[in-house]
Length: 307
Image 1: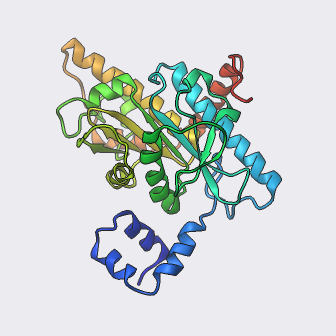
Image 2: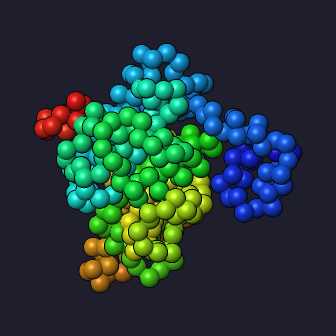
């Protein structure tokens, strides 16, 4: 029997025999109708019962998402985790001009220190057309992010996809090791138990949507994708959670790289300790508090990210 959840999983991996069987049947039109009529989830809570119906509610939710994404860009740049005008961060939001959601991102050529809420583009998740804002998107952002959003949002309500080349994490991603990030090394690393996928098949710039679809499959249900010889990708239901994971991943990677540089032998915590740290319920609250503190700090910088 094809349940909606099962069909969504099959859609992510369309090479399966079950997907081929389904596509030849009569259920496909019904599935596609439901698949394209996805319900929106706010960036500050778990999945809501329905998308905002009235225009004022959509406008309010759109603006909040814009502020959250602008904060993410500016906060990562604050910690030297950006890279010129490259790398890309995206967030799902209800559109200001239509009922369907849009993918928010910056226009190509904008430095992360310049990002404001009003300067973000809104892109169609399926066509890549810019629906809101002025400017052209980064091609890689469209090719990588849209397939990942389309694969994960129907399954777990994921709204944020962040991709950076943050230096210490990328250093680890360049190591010749099938799992180079050492989970048991430090407290900061232990929180990522069973949350990291690895892609060691770097094949140049990601300028085609096929690469985004491939990365979505490699990521699976994980929160982080360590991309060999490239960087890292983080996904979450809220922008603050994805930002928090990238920040602490970079801190953990810094500890690992500095330890390796010293020539000293590292320690590994017992499995039960690692699991206890990873399972702690503090992370969502801490992520929200940290994110709000960054909004306060960045509010004093120009241009004002909330404009």
